[in-house]
Length: 244
Length: 338
Image (cartoon, rainbow over all chains, first blue to last red; front, side, top):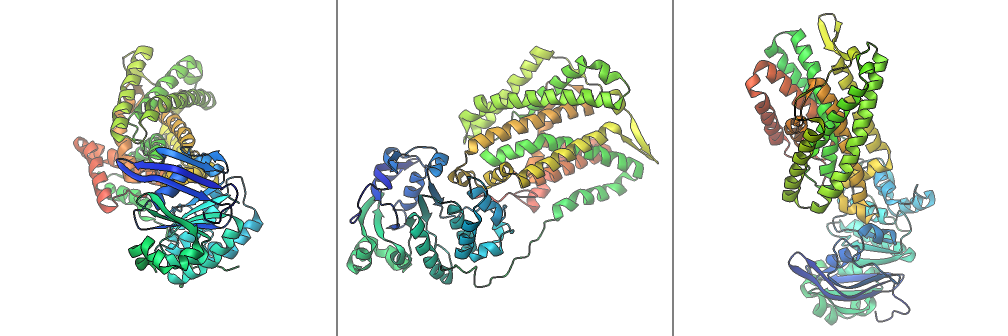
């Protein structure tokens, strides 16, 4: 990162990931500073989701190293990576539909009963969750499920949160309000956000990395990319047009 | 702090309970009544079906969770049924004095010890089976079918070596023989015990699945095991626990099933597995509630058709499965999958 100082919280060096016969990540190099939000941009199929899943241990890297807080985590079992302090919000949200909102949150609070003050803070960010607390997550709308998926990731303090396309399929009014909630979240923790909605990403991101064909092709400050339309067009092209 | 609104139409949804599958056994028994034509016979068949259904449920409940959690097809489940039954046979043989005395207390104590030994034994066998046979083939369905069927064959041959290959008599304890007569109806005592055991197992499972953290993890894991891991829980450790518990329940079911038939062979497990698979398919793979209703339906169909049209008893359950899958392709209570 252009303005990064000190040891990165998360570092990927020469990471390759194969899914079956497909060579998806082809040498990803990425350093994530502690604090703030780094946005990972790129067209569909560039390898953004695979990068998050590789960090989380859901797909094992075939080559390269993943280091979190100075400790190698590449190829470690997913529960160990989660216990090291990384939370994951997948693109599918993956809320447990047959469990109530409360039960989803109970499972997310791994170390025991949830801290009431923290729960109130979460309710402050996402009031719908309080309202639907005893309802099965399956009856929630898409936006509400996204809120639950994010709330689950912050049920306890985490060092790093990986969030995959939180605005996908969500109503514009909800997206606007999400910007405020995310701005508050990034004050508490480090966020690596995969996003196609450039306006959403630009309004929140401190740093940006752009992927293409399984590699990082650009790294820098989000403000620089947001202020340079020619660079946006060159790096994001059709993807940018589709998601403005 | 900026709050994210619930949605533009922020109304509480109406929760609808799905009662239709629960009504099915009542409808089926009502349809059977005019064909059977005699209320006493109908009551006898229905009570027998409930007892048989509870035994099948006890056997199938662990298997459905094993499939739901890790997508593992265990065709070797019948081995735990048979081993449980043979272990109980040995214990009851050692405690023959307590079994033959006409005292419900002593009889139940002997049966309780036999069941405990059978459940511990099959639980341990289940642990070894999972570690040695199932673990190497996670995610490979064809290999799972082949190797678990192989495990079943090996187990049956080992039973022949240890207990002999001949058919064994499994006599009911004295106080559990005969029937309780209420008016015109005679209800066999052992069938009442089987229903009670099945209901206790069902209630315990509901309690564990809905009121404990382990239970929540199992339900969540059945829906999306990957997300449970991403939350920091070791799903494979949980799976081993469920496999062991499911094997122990199969052992318990095996004891009840052998006592119900009053005979046993090494093939006792394999014989009932066709019905067990029908039950977990029509119940909805991974659904304990669906498994419970499915077991009662299958047992009712088996008992009514065995009385009315004995030649089509097994085919009737296959037709039942086809009918239910045409109505609900994922089973009576489908589990939400990622």
